[in-house]
Length: 248
Ligand code: C2E
Ligand code: CA
Ligand code: CA
Image (cartoon, rainbow, N blue to C red; front, side, top):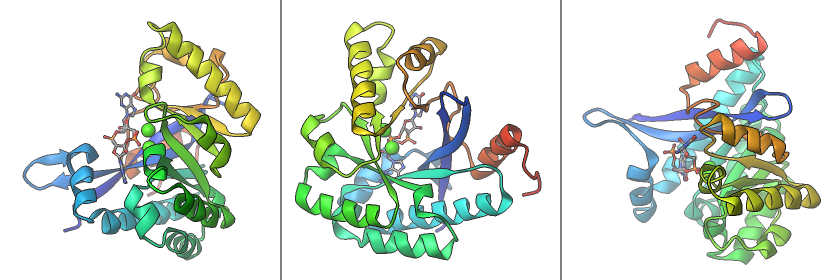
């Protein structure tokens, strides 16, 4: 019924102190219950196979919005999207993405698909096949929520990925747990060695931000920088940041 909406959470480059990127997060504007978060309907949608049409809608909406931002020249350089296991294995992901990139006049490198380790390990061989097809187009791939599953170093070596996203549980513990600090420092160094970009999620305090800067993390995302925003809210932020046109 046209009740889904996309929100955009800015991802800040720690060196520049600017956000040219954002993660797309789906919401359901329910007529009776108000705004529903993905945790309330994505698991069910996955069980019912509705995740395929929902995921397709998210891809279409994200690409169309990115096309609008490009035409307005407001300085949005990349959007990342969450891809569920079923989309990875059961949809023609690479073809869908190729079509949408062309249709909206995007550069493939302006899109990043976020996959979790738990999705990939359901069938590593098939997953790698899809990931390679996607990367051949020039579209980027991130490994999401790293640290929550097996966190296998072997997958880090083997999977064709561009970006590692450190799960927010590590970031939330950095001030109290020396172990979390060590793991983050290690992941940053490992990412450097492997030529990966590294993003820390769930940054809520200045202390956490200061630690991540000192640890030389590339990018951060979290309520301290900004909560997820509507497309209009994101446009305003970009315009404030880079001084583009203000008419929507
Ligand atoms: P995720 O991919 O790990 O997304 C990050 C989640 O952390 C988002 O929750 C975001 O709002 C929240 N977050 C951001 N900054 C902070 C912070 O500083 N502190 C805390 N505590 N949380 C923060 P959200 O939007 O509720 O999404 C939850 C999950 O639902 C996502 O986790 C993702 O796995 C899934 N999801 C969201 N959109 C989609 C989608 O379009 N397709 C699929 N398949 N899954 C989606
Ligand atoms: Ca994500
Ligand atoms: Ca995540």
